[in-house]
Length: 114
View 1: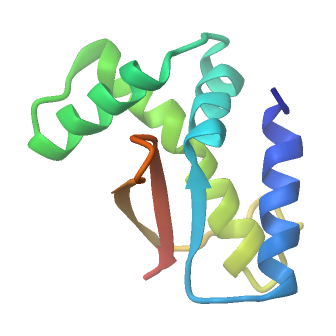
View 2 (view 1 turned 180 degrees about the horizontal axis):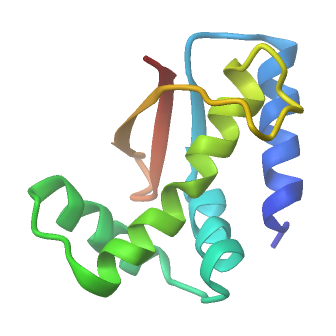
C-alpha cells in the first residue's frame, strides 16, 4: 500500500494535469491519513462506520479523533490543489467535504473549495 505522501502527490499531480472544481480523496488515502496522523491502522468498515456516525451527528470521543485524522488528508489535498501556492504549507483554503459511496462499497471524500 502506498504511503500518505505518495498518495497525496499522485492525486495532486493528476489534478493539476486536468484541474477541476473538485478533487477526490479515495478510501485508500483516508485510511493512510489515519495512519499518518495517529499511527493506527483502521479497516475500511471502521472508516465507513465513523463517517456514518459523523453524518448522523452521533460521533464523539475516539471516533471523532479518528474522523479528524481521516479528513486531515482533505485539508492537504485542498491546499495542494486549490491554493495559489500549493507548496506553502501555511496556506489556508476553505473547503467542503461531501461523502460518496462508490459502487464497490468503498467511500471517498469529494473536496471542493468553498
